[in-house]
Length: 242
Length: 84
Image (cartoon, rainbow over all chains, first blue to last red; front, top):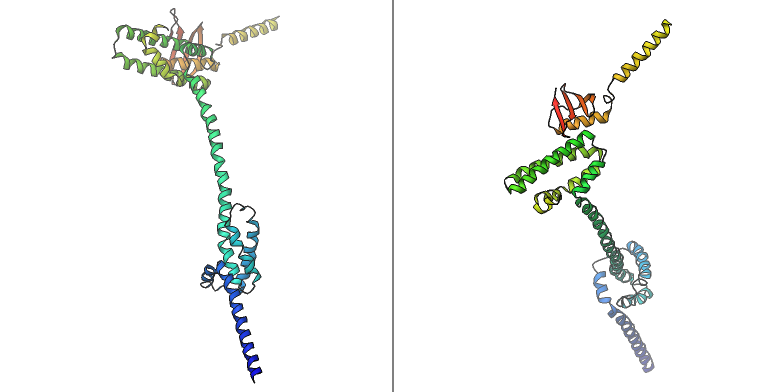
């Protein structure tokens, strides 16, 4: 009787120890992140059919992610719990959920990194491209604006867009206008300035209308140098040098 | 002899007719130049359709609107547009 009782007590004790030992093995694996996993698993009773495709999806990206995400140190601990979870086959829901959270942060950084370089590269290209664009038109404007009376007169003589009679008539009108400017500078009558400006604009318009079809380049130069010519005409010192 | 004379008369008359026509009448550059000059002088014309050369730098221009102008360069070197 005593032996049987002892044997029974021993078996009960062994069973108790085994049960305790089994509980103790499960508990250490949980603290690695099972708290958050269990919370996520509870609200999502995913069917087994849906879980299986997710496994295939989640298992593939992590293999690729560690390679580009080498500098990310916090990822290894997240990957560490995976092997034990994979080894423990039964908690499949736990395996699927951590990868769900992982792919999002792991995929987003590469996207940001991949987007960042193109964003960073275009600005230099635009900066480098913008200076030539701005630099090119400036010389053209400067050359067009630097037309003096001598150059303008020579170009008007050489152009074939205006006939002989028209050139002679224009010369007559220019001479008349210069005579009026000479009178303006002699009398120093500022009231004449408005009328002179009107006559000057009218003559320039006539020249432009004559040149715009036959010699558009000269017409553009005349138009761009209109103010420069006016400034020469109204300046007594510059006018004396003509 | 009579036929030869007839041919000679015809040749001379044709040459006279061709030479008598103003060389500037069909020159578009001259017509355009006269049109521009008349417009520069502020005279109504529209467009010169025909021009007859009277002399050196002297033309009679017929405008599209029917008006006629004499365009010439006077002794002072000025272009003058006179309505005919």
